[in-house]
Amino acid sequence: GQCTLVCPVGALIETPHWHEVLHTLDAHRRISAVQVAPATRVAISEEFGMKPGTVSTGRMINALRALGFDYVFDTNFAADLTIMEEGSEFLGRLKSQQNLPLFTSCCPGWVNWIELNRPDLLPHLSTAKSPQQMHGALTKRGAFAQSLGADFANGKNEPYVVSVMPCTAKKDESVRPGVSGDVDHVLTTRELARMIKARGIPFSALPEDDEFDNPLGESTGAAQIFGASGGVMEAVVRTASHFIGREDSLPLEWQQLRGVRQGIKEAQIPGIGKVAICNGIATLQKMLQSEQWREEYVAIEVMACVGGCLGGGGEPKSMDPDILHKRMQAIYQIDSQAPRRRSYENRDIQKLYATELEEPNSERAHELLHTAYAARNSKRLLLMRFLDCVDRRDG
Ligand code: SF4
Image (tube, rainbow, N blue to C red; front, side, top):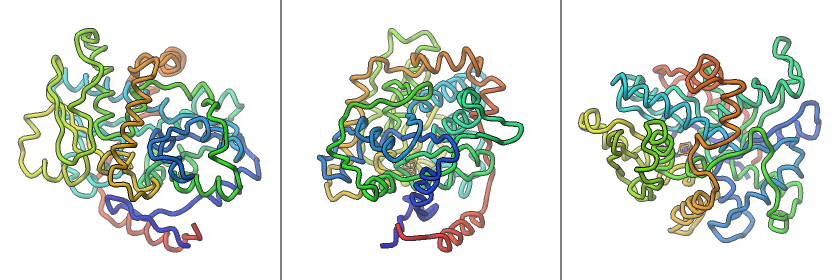
């Protein structure tokens, strides 16, 4: 049947791309790499009849290799990188007292909303790209691509980059001005499940033993919790406490910032200030009704979907009223068992700064990992919807 999925913030309609991806993989003209978002490895299990909350990381990697991807990377690697960039930007703003509170920028549903509805607030948005775009930029134009023989001057041998996301708005993000070209195709979790089924890969029978490839694969527990509402802020706080020399006195876990119930969650972080989480766009809209947020908070996380990405529009549909909670628990469980739980402890990230990026917010880091925003009217989105209707095929 026709695959039409409405984005939770009404930004766009899902266009399936999985036929095109299979076609490109089969042709095998370029080295291919896929990155997978944190929420997908949990939710994909539901598509194959497993219990909600089952973690299928190894099975999913096995399936992606069986589909023909040469490299299987973890978007989480870039989530750690986002924290390094956004965390440093945040501490810089705290120091200069400019453009506070900082708004997180990794949710394109929210970025679309603010560009369309409140462009006056754009200076508050972090300039850090989302993990998807950071990962794509590094895979295509960083040292990894060079090691594969990519010739940037002549645009040759550039790897083919696909991402799997829980989110329909990520498709729109990948063609935004300024970041377009980082990622070739974006698939939703549901589309990945369709590809696996179409190829007759026995997902639930696959071994749970495979691991992500390196160098763009290692990640910490802090990156894992990006998939849940409150996770990005908790990850920022974990690394910021290290940067301000308070790592030993501040807790690693911030329960006040966790949970899938709607409304504002907040926490007072000693040495940093008060931070807030808007769980869903409706909560954000309520917060903006008064001007109090300007004085009250130093940083605000906004995720368009209730629950965060684990409630995203590309995730499997479920009738279980407790589904968000179950997915959330699975994510925090992966974090609690991770050997490293702060983004700056990621050894591949440390290497990346030592060899390529120098330091967070360096010139090279800005070139690859940051972007800009602009007020826009809805014409571009309407055009995309129109093209979407023309392009839509059997999902
Ligand atoms: Fe996409 Fe996550 Fe934002 Fe929802 S919260 S729109 S899934 S990035």
